[in-house]
Image (tube, rainbow, N blue to C red; front, side, top):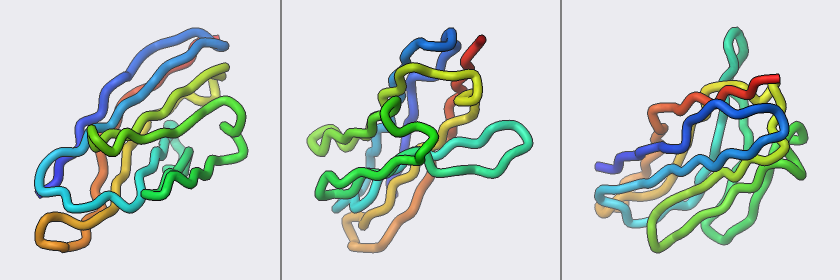
Length: 120
């Protein structure tokens, strides 16, 4: 079984920075794609950024140039570095990881969510 633990929640002022972390543990064989999503009150969950096992990244237009996704394969951890934060970035951020466990069974799991609040 694979588990995720998110960290880095916080309250920051507009223009500030914050880094989120998501660490995977358990019976991991591979992690093919790792991503961050967010959900603001009254809105649908949306993709923020993705990174593949090969290191290719993709980000939503609203965060390009401000947010950076990265991964540390040795630590089974994905990060989201957020800079120049805006009040509209306020949301619960969720980590998502897809891969195969030690039995080569595909998994697609979500973190518990971490609150990011940006004040104006």
